[in-house]
Image (cartoon, rainbow, N blue to C red; front, side, top):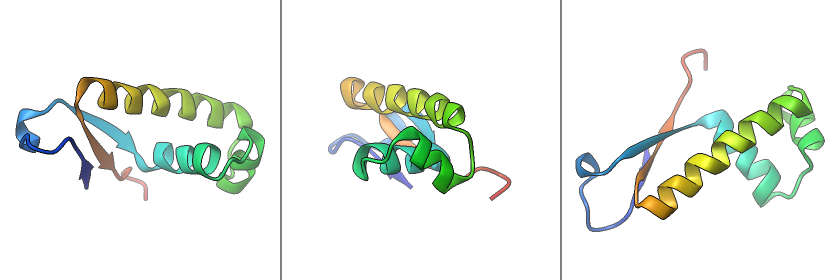
Length: 79
């Protein structure tokens, strides 16, 4: 699954991978307004892990939006 700018075929765009755990952290913290600690409890990881994941995820999304790149949603192997 992908999210991309309209009008340009996917194969012509830079593709930025967003892992599903990164998407979930964005949803919990930015959409649902949970604290990093609350998000960590929901996901079964530490607040520090949430902080690391959300920092990377926000940079990826910001790059895709400002550069007109596609976001490719990636399911991790262990899921």
